[in-house]
Amino acid sequence: MKNLKFFLYGAVAVISITVIRCLQVTNLINPENGFFFDGMEGLGAALTAATLLIVAVGFLLGLFVKTEGIITSPKPNAFLGGAALLVGVAQLSEPIVGIAVSYEISPLLYILKLLFIGLSGVYFCYFGITMLLGNSPKSVFSVVPVACAVFRLVVTFISFTGMANISDNMYDILALTATMFFLLFYAKSLVGIKFKPGNQMLFSAGLIAVLLNTAAVLPRIIMTLLGVKQYEHIQSDSPISIMFITLYIAVYMLVISKNSVDSSKK
Image (cartoon, rainbow, N blue to C red):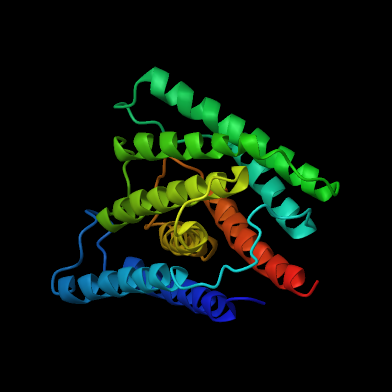
């Protein structure tokens, strides 16, 4: 597979960030006020800096990936189709399961967010089913997830939802921003808009979106499964949807890298 080192770094980075964030949230942050415990400020800040450094290195590695022969509009693929279908179902169920609502959000903005989440869910279901049936989905609809990501970011940025701690707020905003940029480059690549360094930015944005989404969501899911309740964090977006879009981004990058090898052998 092309760019194997890039993907190996991504796997190690995901594990490292998950461990760092779990240690940080469970041992260094006071759940009552969201600040580091007295005397732990230095260590807490150092772990945050280490996490952001891991993300920054991932971004730089993405700029040096080999993109010769990579076709960003993937052929029908069962793994990618399945990942897209999971995203679609998660997003369609998001308004039903329930989303935290802030009193600071206008009803119109909230309705628009729900509308675009639903449309994005329909897009990913369409993309996934089309892929699973062995056909290529129409690229023009890829603008819908971009609009959805913009509304998610705006609503989260101006919301107050009783979030557990300040570091969670930061990671939520950074993760949504990185995901929005990836979806923007993703949509451009699918519709054939060329720009430099287009494919490199696609991989860079994809990796930092995976890493920041991991930092924002995965540690809390792990702690919930382990029964650690005092560190619950209320989000304006579904953690399940975030994890599935993270999985989709990773699978998409893997699939287009693998396809580039196949095409080079012909």
